[in-house]
Image (cartoon, rainbow, N blue to C red; front, side, top):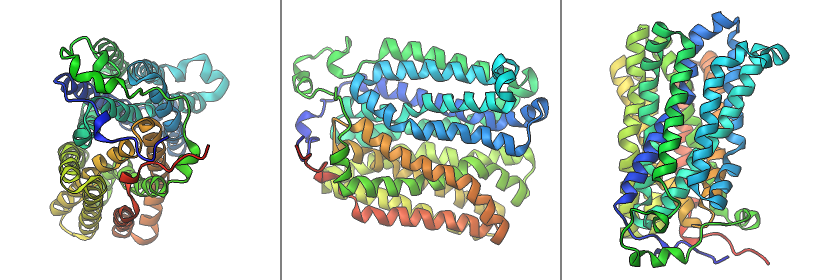
Length: 435
């Protein structure tokens, strides 16, 4: 393996079809979040209907995160090995089935063996396994379809779909649940995923060269010399590359903070800031709308900076700025007394947090084009370990010392994540493997 295998000569030339591919990734991103978030809304009706306690429901939520964290690296490796077209299609079908099964599991024979909580926890674990494949394979697609100078923007657009999914799911799911029952919410989102699987299979290809709509074949001779298939994960090289570990550590900080928004923001607005249920729901979407806007902008900025100042400086400036500004905005929002400026500041915090996402994911492609899937899977596993800790620790700190301290901790963690960028140097590539 070369010390650095992501030079510009093997990045694909731009084709118009790449925007269609990015649009599809954005749509898949929206659906992953609908399928992940809908249970936190339906829980209100599910718990009394199925006789589950808060504690039991918490375990069902955690089962998803465990499956999701454990399968990041295998999911990325599959994309590196087989290409993202087949892997994402299979993943969409897989997790749509388990989304629908969430509604059926409590009444199934599985529940008579494992109990209702056991059946639900297993179903959500398997849903997490399927969804784990998504983001590392988005990175595989962006690496294969976009030139180096557009990868930050590409992954920023793809991951920005999170903002839409997380913002629309609570109100829409609540409406479906009230009018048609909680099961219907799962059946409808499963159908959405199945439809998208079919569309992705027919419209996507692994590389521009393989796509029937890409007309100018001469331009694409260069891409064919860089095969994506790679049989094994270069563990030795990863272990010997300090940048990989700093990247994982820094992104774990981002994961910790992101999960505070995903698990506690709504309840914080209602219980701590005193909003009623509907207004709370409305304002709870503000951080996610900020993510929708800031995520692609941050990706675009890191690409511009990388083109102007070199890869490492470009990734570092955008990644560090996003994390440090997120820390400041969250810290400020935690201590402001007045609720509306507090919401504005905390929402900006989420926006700045995701402003740095493009820099993180592009850095994994910069480090190694061949192993972009596995590498980003490793990094995202870190984020989900951080994410598994924060939903539990956040309310505990709040109970001991109050919510300003609890959110202040998240702010501090964001700042630490930003400072770790000083050690991240994607331009060097992976360490040489010892043969």
